[in-house]
Amino acid sequence: MAFDNIEIELKFRVTEALFTSIGDLLSSGALFKGEFRQIDHYFVPKWNNYLAREFPFEWLSIRERGDNSVLNYKHFHPEGVEVTTHCDEYECPISDPSTLVSIFREVGIERAVIVDKTRKLYRFEDVEITMDRVQGLGPFIEIEATREHGSIDGTRTHLNKIAERLRLMPPEAEVDYRGYPYLLWKSNAS
Image (tube, rainbow, N blue to C red; front, side, top):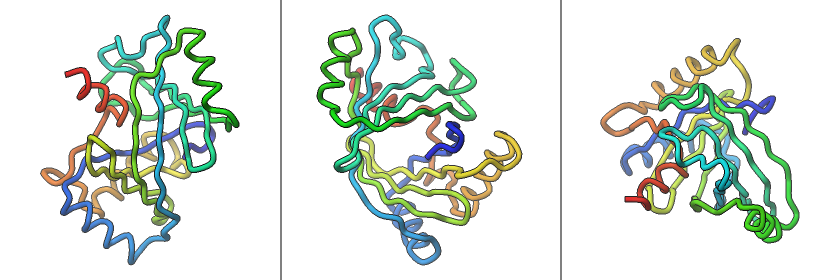
């Protein structure tokens, strides 16, 4: 969930034990907002192959959320580096995703990867925490800002404090700087 079209989040690949432990903690101390399956289809234009870069900083996706679908575009900052601070995120609802996929194909935008995940969403203090099980990747925890804390750096500091409180630390947790589509694309390319 972006605020003012800016998304600031931390994402961690976690062990099963930590995933269960954090789930127990959130069940007793956070507002449960639901569990759902989400399927995200990521696309790459032939004339601007995001995946040709060492560190892709753009993603275009069609996101299926039950009976609803949205077109999503993310642009990460700073560009072309492994560790980014935030992204510009734009979404708009679409009523006919299969026709949009056909249009993409006709204009040279090809599907690169599909991210299929089951997500539990919690509101914890002033952040959203999601517990994701991603097909082909395993369990992850995301902490996402729902508002700014003075600046992008200030907001990231706030998210890191929440992560420390949840004990999202090595070796049970590993920060993911690249995101699900990149991880799946890399594992499929190997």
